[in-house]
Amino acid sequence: MNSAKSREVVLAMHDVSKNFSTGGQSTHAVCNVSLEAKRGELVLLLGPSGSGKTTILTLMAGFLRPTSGEVRLLGNDVGSCRPDDLQRFRARSMGFVFQNFLLIDALTVTENVMVVQEFCGTARKAARGKAGLLLQQLDVAHLGSRFPPTLSQGEKQRVAIARALANNPEVILADEPTASLESSQAMEIIEILRRLADEENRCVVAASHDGRLRDQANTIVSLRDGKIENITPEA
Amino acid sequence: MTLYSLRTLRGQPFRLVFTIGGIALCILLMLFLASIYHGVREGSIEYIRANATDLWVLQGSQTNILRGSSILLTAHGQVLKQVEGVSAATPVVFLLSTIRKSGRTSTVYLTGYDILTGTGGPPGISEGRSVLREGEIVLDRSFAAKFGINIGDSVMIRDHDLLVTGFSEGTNMFVIQYAFVTLSQAQALIGYPGLVSCYLVKVSQGSGVEKVSMDIKSELPGVEVYPHEEFVGNNVREMESGFLPLLYAIAVIGAIVLTSILSLILSMNVLERRKDFAVLKALGSPRHILRRIIFTQSLTLGWSGCLAAFALAGPLMGAVEFLAPEVSTRIGIGTFAAAFAAAGAMSFLSSCIAVRRLRSVYPLEVFQ
Image (cartoon, rainbow over all chains, first blue to last red; front, side, top):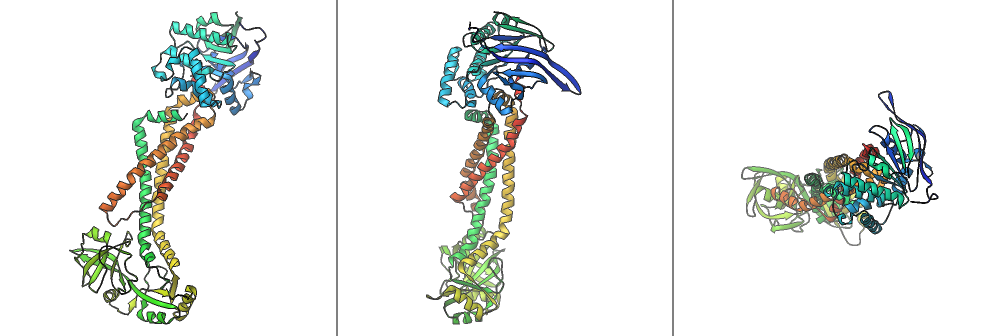
């Protein structure tokens, strides 16, 4: 485990609400949510479908702006960032893991990991080297020249995690990272996310309804109807 | 992202071939029109250019021989020869005449010239020989090919039976072709032996062309006198004024069709790959990288179509000239370079149109 000193707050939400208006009706997707996520911590947003988990993730990433409240990521107010700054911020400081992996089918596994490095201007040779290293760490180096449609679900998620780590981000946001996986594969992915927080001192925020993640999370934020039911600190 | 751009194009092989084929046809159309334009341009003025004289003397207010009807008298020639500095004044007769051969008729631009000096005669003989005497005629080679006329055949103009002695080249004006007879033969066909169309004046060494021109105008107030290059320019403008607007209109239509095909295909590609673009946006892709994907695809399609058109241009133009000998096509490196640049410009424009589609792709879509 990391020392307490290294556990600075990298992501904070203060009294954040998000309303959606459709057909003159306002829906409260997230109501007065306040939470913090520290470096070296795996934070689990847990709740049933429609509880607001994904909305909170998208607010953290700046894909949505809060109706009220403030989202601060690495000291920056995400809600007031200009689109170009937000794009740079996402490329350099955030890594994303999606439920359906969302790899680019037209690119090989290695190229999928290289592509996000291109966003930060990394030279092609260096990007290839880094991609190889990450794929090796995630035990999928032998798949480097294959295309995503030929991989198993578990392999795809490992590649997606390698891609999320390609620019060495401080924060990893994972949306239902185990939902499309078989039990054994899901456990492997949970373990990897745990290691990212623990050994690499990253802040990992995972939105999931998968109870198996409970045992690995430092903090569990239980959600229902867009509100926090409770926050359980766990070691 | 170049690999992504190319692989996504390759992923739809039928569409790829269809798109490149459509672009190739558009560029082929433009190349074909350009080659016809150059062919007509050269064919229209080659005769004038080949008869390099110092001054062209025409009836007052006439500027060219392509679409004018200059009438002068043989007496003007006598006056011209008296002007100081004039070493030769050779008359030429031009008249539109109908040729009859085996029941078929067609119109030629009949030219009567002085066979002794050869001035005003055909720029070149591709087969047979020049006119040596009355009762003979030299036809443009494409005209002869079109009507199946051979050397030694006879053709009729009015009631004159003329023996074909040779075929000329550089005398195809696309809509009409030159034919050559002796000056006296042409005058006999007009019915007025004292008439000519213009004079080609040679200035003697040591005399200034400008001064001789002024002197001719002062001696013969009712005539126009043009230095050779100015006269060539007059004829080029005359030809272009009747031909270029049509070519421009067709070329613009071709360009619009090409740009439309490309932008539609690129826009369709963006919509079909919407998920990929949303993922790239979500992962933090700068806008210029996403635009570059579309631009690369656009240039790849545009220039592939262009190269396909280049490959087809030679055989197509050969086939056209074979099937329609009066169609003279000329194409050079400059035309190919211009087509390549135009394809690049249209590809850029198409990609700009397709890039607008990216605005409607939201990174939030990846969470749905």
